[in-house]
Image 1: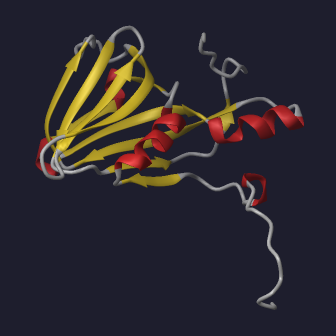
Image 2: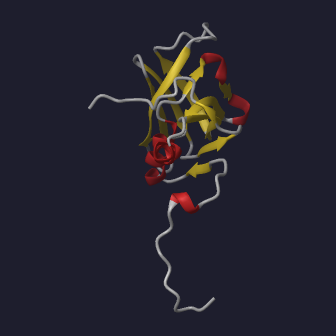
Length: 164
C-alpha cells in the first residue's frame, strides 16, 4: 500500500459487528460508557457485590444504541444484548431507592458518572429510574463493559425515549 494514498474517515458501518468490550480508566471515557448503558434494564438479582474481589458487577439487558441508526436505515427491529458492567477497585457500596430483598425488582439505568476524589480515588454513581441510585467508592476509575450474548430483538421493538 502506498504511503501517499488518501484514507477517508472511519465509519462505524465499516466495522464488522462484534461484541463491545470497553474500559473506562479516565474521566473522559465515562460518558461514552454511560451512553451505551443508558436504558439498560436489570433486576436486583442481576447485581453482585464481591467485597473480597473489590468488584461490583451488573448483568444488564443493554439497548444497542450503537446500532440504532443502522436498524432505522435498514428498517429492521431494534436490538438489546446482555452485557456485564464491572466496577473494579471498590472499597464500599451504598444504594438508595432499591429494595434489595425484592430480587425480581426491575431497575433501569439512566446514567453513570465519575465523581473524582483525592489522588486517583473517587466514586462511580449509577442513577436509576424512580429515584434509585448506587454509589461505589473506588480506589481508582476502573469500569469495564462487555457484551456476553448475541444481540436479540428488543421485546418492545421500540427505542427508548427521553422527554426533552
